[in-house]
Amino acid sequence: MNKLMIWYGELIAPKKLLKRGALFLSPGMLWLIFFLVIPGLVLILVSFAGRGSYGELVWEFGLANYKRLVGYGIFGWTPDYIVILLRSVWVAIVTTGLSVVLSYPLCFFIAKKPERTRYVWLMMVIIPFWTNMVIRTYSWFLILAPEMPLAKLAAYFKLISPGMALYPSAFAVYLGMISIFLPFVALPLFSSVERMDWALVEAAQDLYSSNVRIFMHAILPQTLPGLSVGIILTFVPAMGMFVVPDLLGGAKYMLVGNLIEQQFGTSRDWAFGAAISMALMALTLFSLYLYRKKNKDIDLL
Amino acid sequence: MKKIKLLVNAMALGTMAFLYLPLMAVAFFSVNNTKYGLVWKGFTLKWYIQLLHNEAILHIALNTLILAVVSTIISTILGTALAIGMGRFPWPGKMNTILDLILHLPVIIPDIILAAALVIAFGLLRSLSSVFEPGLICMIISHITFQVAFVALVVRSRLISIGKDIEEAARDLYASTSYLLWKITLPLLLPGIIAGAMLAFTLSLDDFVISFFTAGPDSVTLPLYIFAAVRRVVTPQIHALATIVLFVTVILVFTMERFTRKKDIQ
Image 1 (cartoon, rainbow over the protein chains, first blue to last red):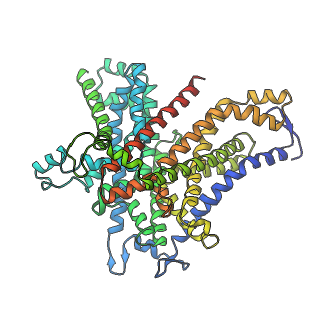
Image 2 (cartoon, chains in turn cyan, yellow):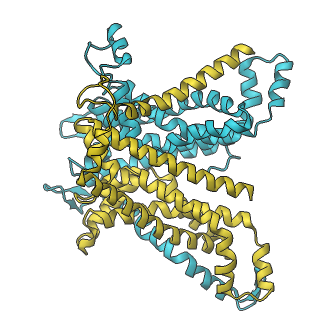
Image 3 (spheres, chains in turn purple, blue):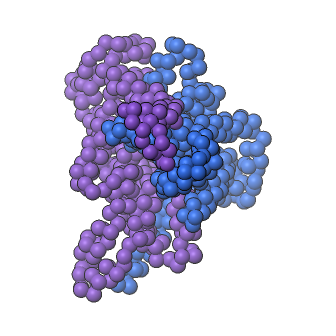
């Protein structure tokens, strides 16, 4: 190791060079290890611990929290928690799917605009992307209020009783989720659509291929890189979402995010909260793994 | 073919309306001259004026700003050093993989899990020092934790794009290590550092979940305040506050775009 090497035009011993590198690296890395890696490991540990009668942690390790999560309680087996977990996955799938369906026309529309106005339209998608989630969620209160046309229409068709708002409901949760995550799909997708070669689409049209085949063979392969980033950016946070189901779903449509928040808030059961977090983490890693397996050549981040 | 084009345009405009109608409703009802209900009773700015005279809200706005500024400054310094440390030294492959993994953790982990982990960590640290009572310091620490990774990733992509030629040339001309860092590398990185800092700033202003878990009674931020308020009752004052936040967001987005687009031209 005492041999000298040339690094960026400097003749230096590797040991000395790495010492200098460690100097740059260590403050940030130590921060991340101390406040991210270690708390993460503690979270895993705590998920096996117990809860004392005052809500404090009891360091007796066991599988009690996980047993409770899959439904075994003092009163026998209930599917409640499993239903919430599955529902969270389902909501994430629907949100991602519908966001993709809505994003394609939006991206085509913006890409076909002349260069001068294109950036204005693009900004129109970037602004909601950065707007605070709480504001974007509660703003649906106004649209779904009983005085507004949407609720009146629903009352007319006897879907809700007159004078009622359309929230809290599953419908409101989906509306809120899609409106929040749509820009997360549309923006990465647009970077692919913008660079798309439309000649391929025209060639497919000239050869009388159906619209479905044009999409599958001429459009999808070209836009896959942006689409994958968009799907990951949506699916993972959508599963753990807490603000939207809390404000627009209430107790009627709970997701795993609300369940975790409850354990750290009103229930004060950190150990159980940690176990639910582990379940969410497992779901996240599993979906990333499935996705990786299907799209091997795609670099995620 | 024309039919499809029409359909695409209609869907795109419909989607735009879907994104903007709720926000426009908030702005619209923030100048409505009635305290209750959603019926138009004439134009007024009194909700905005009341807001500016509300000391509690000004205090909360100040909290939000302090949190964002302090966490952005610290995370930008840490993140930039981290990016240089990772990108400019011959680390063995295995160590690079581990560093890379740690750096990507805050990006991949759902924020509610990070929040949960930090709540427990602060809870345990509290027995050592009262610094870790829920409050502004805990919030700053938490925000830095997710910001560092984003800053480092942005700066590192800039580091890769500037290549090694200029720095090698400087070395050939006998630049010392510190001269190289301060006069060559950092100025070249500046657009990336600014972009990273602005990203960190916006992420902090935008954050709800992590603040919600780590805040104390005296360290409420604007998103937390709005959340707590709309859970009780929605008032035109909240609409006015939301509209102001919205307006600030638009300004931030425009300046951020300016920076990133200028970088592309260079």
